[in-house]
Length: 160
Image (cartoon, rainbow, N blue to C red; front, top):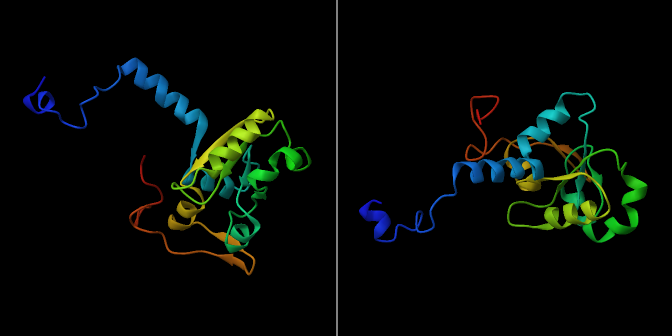
């Protein structure tokens, strides 16, 4: 143990998990989450992406902007309307406003409890817009320049 660890380094105060435990945790995380740029890439390919995107926000939020082709189903209405809007054989990717909102998590839970395969889109609508992807509003299509703090300026992808 280094002297900094012994003196209370806040990062290592709780030691890292074993490599095997870390691998299991991160593999499981990928089964529950999808990245905004991966969702955009799958949708932009033009074919069937193999999943449906679900916006779990209010109608006012939906009108302000949403992912093109997304299904609008506010979390509070999932139990009563999911069966009419979603095919239980098709995985669902939920999103809400952004990382400061757990609405997509609540929507994913509600869908999973109804038997749907589900992932949550990390970053939500905020990062969809910040990464420069096209979106729709009640007025029509829109797109903003990518925020250089969230997306590469001179490359197609971040290389992650």
